[in-house]
Length: 443
Image (cartoon, rainbow, N blue to C red; front, side, top):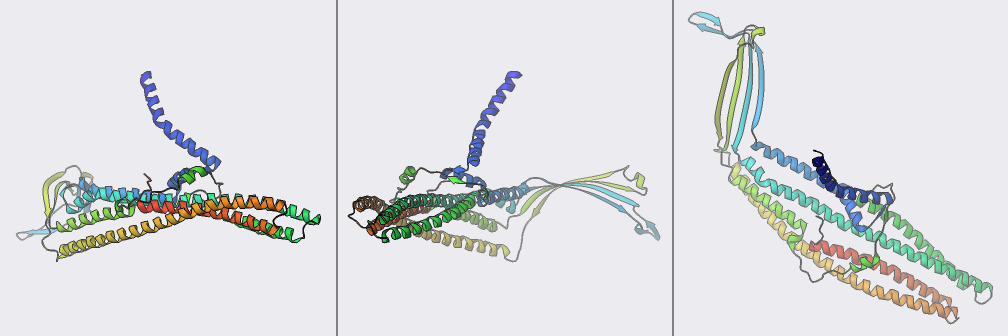
């Protein structure tokens, strides 16, 4: 027995080990509060209220399906009755009135029925898998939106933090320039306008830095909301910029396939359900057939203490057939209505195809323009850095004025900030393009 127990312990440990690793990994993330994009999305899948609501809706739908399918199972009921006749009934036999019956009457009943055929229950059986599919597709739709929104919020926060780093670097340069201009003024080399300009530029950059710091707080709060992360807990994000830039490329020659869009799949599933509904009304003239069985025990006695001493059993089995002969054209009207609903849904499919195509064309145009702008601004940053370095050297040699240096500094800062704005835009545009193509996979 001991070797067998040891074997099962090893099997259980093997099955539990991956779950323990996942729990440990999640616990480490929660403890350190640092998440990559993939970890943010995984966390949102587990904690975002919208996804949890979709999962609860799936569970509710499953219960409703099971409740409808339970009609195929035998339906058994039991009953008990007791009657005390205060005045017994009188019957006349010849010319003599005689009381009939007993003072105490009681009965026990057991009834069972089994549906053999029912159009209602058949509809529930045929529509169960389509209902489950629709619920699952609704959850998938919520997950896809979560991936897109969390990714956009993640990139926005990440790139805003990079903009803050740029402003910090600019402030450090401006502070040095301010000190140098002040020193040159005090030495009588330049007039006071140089260090005054440096003071103005430094104050403006510090104001931009403060604005960016406040924006980062708001972006953290928004990301926490999308993730379902506790608002009172610290959150930090980490990402590899090289891999992020490597993911910018997207296939711009791929054609849109409507069947890949979850919205279109939902409509197709609804179309199948409407087809079942039409079939249900078309065959609504068929009878409902069920088998029945009744068993009862009758107890009669004038004395209550002896009421249950003797039982009079009865039992019966039968077949019930309910045929709808005339319903005032209700079945026909319902069938025509169901057919019209199918025709209306067909128009919804066509409208959805047009909307998907428009969304794809818009997303593709935005991605191409944003990608081209990102490439242009990437070159602008390199040029601005080179121009600033040259003018800084020329200013130190007394060739260029301080105004030229401020202009070069401003151009460099603006080029760097524009670059990160363009980087966010192209990443967001790629997400919109992937969603338009139905390429975002969440299962």
